[in-house]
Length: 422
Image 1 (cartoon, rainbow, N blue to C red):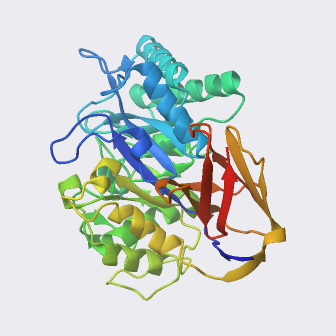
Image 2: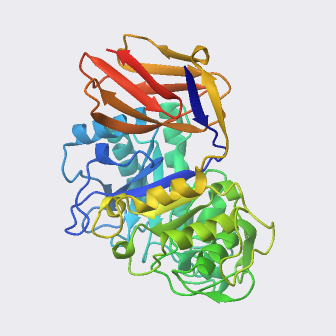
Image 3: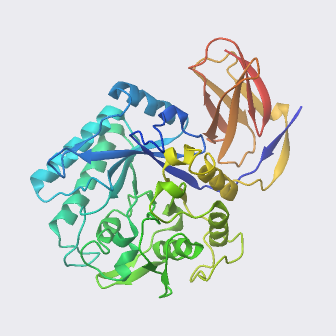
């Protein structure tokens, strides 16, 4: 028997924010119901306790803490990264003294200890950050300096406790980043000292290209949200860097930049762009398509290693009444995971073990370059039980089977169909 495998060369990720509340238009979504195309799930949000801006708390909306922690572990067993996002649009976070910084750090560490996420996402908005002087490389505002120190302390404690690097991402609004080209003061450019100080620790920077006013591109022109030009101009600014009155902001490697957009029209007050336009913008950005608008890439010509896409939110993406269900996730896959090559694999090249399976099933192959493979799990009657994407680890794919009862099952993927028993 021969099996066909699609070769996938890209290493992009799909990040989605999951919101911890029930919205009439975007209902509560259980963590185990999240579409498998999402690689990074940002739990939204850790927020300050009432009456403070620094004593942080998180309470699951529809689960006990132990149940929620178990749901996180289930996602992690599927090779997903789960982060807790701090802040959000309605919960300013502000640290103004060493004592407040200590409370901030300790309450965040308590949440990490309870839920065991892979890391944190910084989503400070509103009055959370402000600059009144200094430069990007040498900030003078105490609140900015304290928050930089706070995250360094949290990361160090995480590393000491768990023996690995804490994953760190940031999702600022455009005014706090690219807005520094217009002015450097107040909220304008206020994130830049934090990003600069933590640049070696940040895994992904995913500026919100929505709910935004018009912004300068590095070509000196002004662009508006909801257009291919806005996506391209603001993304290239993050990679190339730009000048401000507070000094030059050094760009980030393209691999660390994710393009942040609303999942559907109702998910944000502005900035939504159709799937076709998003695909046209990203294909031009990565060198796979023609220029879709007036903005012309200024420097490298293209950025084929761009980090991926981010969306607010998974809940909105799952909602059929706002757009097609999971249209954003499907657009991501359309852009980055199109079939580029196919070859046949003989049965002798594929090993499935152990059979019978217990808690995990391993599928080993030879010569696979795919970053991840989509698996669909069926019972003996042909009923689809779940679909998951599994990361490639040395041509080895681990599939969780611990939640299955005894019986005969089938695994289907680009590798073909295999059967196993538990």
